[in-house]
Image 1 (cartoon, helix red, strand yellow):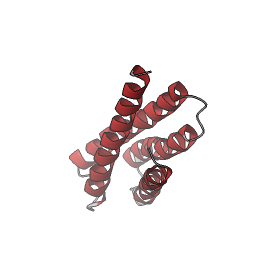
Image 2: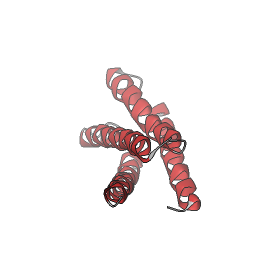
Image 3: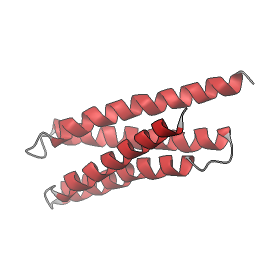
Length: 123
């Protein structure tokens, strides 16, 4: 994987995390907003942070582990957004925009993990 693509993906994850911040900041301040908003802030931000940590991994195994955590956090964010979208919690198109982006990020990260694991199998 060339370094420029890593940077682009890192930027995408950072942008996703930032969009989550803006989305959560505009959520109603009720029990649902606090519960799902706090959880979404953690998982959305954690996906970018874990990917950043993976860039300094000491081995392929460490890299796969950290990127796998990124994937898990993205999947958690996806379910959270689906719940909020299902109950029409906010009056905006932002959940659909975020769902589209998280779906793409999940596919990209899953492919990275798959390819890295296949590369280990050929050694």
